Image 1 (cartoon, rainbow, N blue to C red):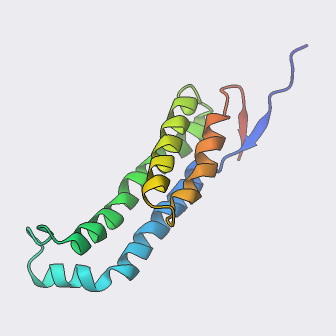
Image 2: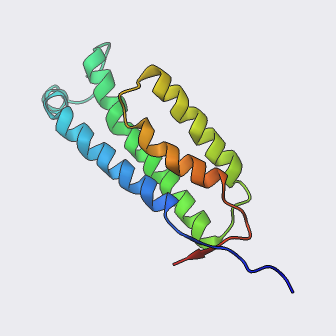
Length: 129
């Protein structure tokens, strides 16, 4: 008789999607005046070499790729296809650790649990819906 298949909740992708949404909202709240100034100047080429505008844009744009990553991981969890989960989790963890070295007071801490959980997923784990 074979061992029972472990059941794991689907949460990693959803967790990252929530972080992505919050990241975008916080960017708009923190840098609202900066974005308004860029809109008033016509948007095109308004970042130039302004470090505040650069920070605002990178902060805002990071939410998009994080959302896409969360969607991909959510799909992977639903399909129970964790063949690349370890590599993906390790890559996310390395990115977070590098970000934390550069910016210890940041939201990179929030992504570490998801990266570690992803590294621990196995293809034989069935998600609980």
